[in-house]
Length: 254
Ligand code: NI
Figure 1 (tube, helix red, strand yellow):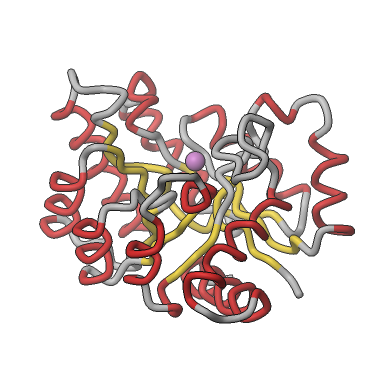
Figure 2: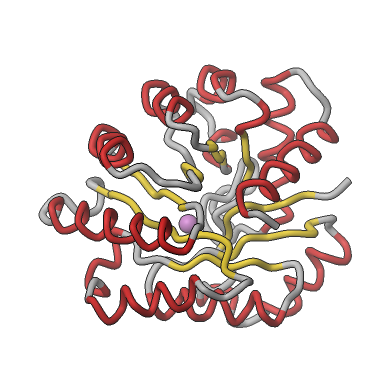
C-alpha cells in the first residue's frame, strides 16, 4: 500500500530541525511515496520547488495565499509564473480567499486570486484553492474565471453547499485531519464526494488528526484521514489509498 499526501508544507520552518530525516522516514518506512509540497508566498514557493528538485517523490506548487497579500506585486506574480514553468511545479497555489483572518482587504484578495488563475491558465496548470469563510465569493470567481485544468479545494470546509458547487465546477475535494475532529460534521460532507473526485492530505505541520491533535503533523498521518474516509464510505483502507493516489496523479499530471 502507498499513499499520496496531496498537500503538506515541508517548506515550513517547523521542519527546519529534522526535515531530511522526516522525509527519508516517510518514504522508506511509512509508505508515503508521493507528497505535494505547497507554496503560499514567494519565499516558501521557491523553497517548495528546491525541495521538490532535491527529492524525487516531492512535487511543488507556487502561489501567493490570501494571508500573504503583502507579496502581491507585479514582480512577484512574474516570479510565481517562472516557478510554475519548472517541470517539478505541478499547480498554482495555494491561492484563494480567507475572510476569517482578513476581512479588510476582500477586493485585493479577489484581484490576487484572479491574477493567479490567469497564470495557471497560461501555464496549463491546475490550482490549489484555500477558502475560508468565503464560499460564495470563491465559487463566483471560479464561475466568472474558469480554470482550464480545474484544481483542488484543499482542506475543504465541511460546507455541503460549497462541496456541491466545487463538484459541479469539476474540481477535486481534498480532506485533511479536519474530518477526524470530534464534533466535525464529516459524514455528510465526505459522503457527498464521489471517490473519483476525492483527495487526502495532511496540511502538515498543521491540522494534526485525532488522536494526535496538538502535536506537529507529518504525512504519515494521512493514513488516519484515509481510514476515516474508508469508514464513512464503507470501503477498505487499501481502496482509499489506491484511488486517492490515482486521483492526485491525474490532477497534478504526474
Ligand atoms: Ni496549506
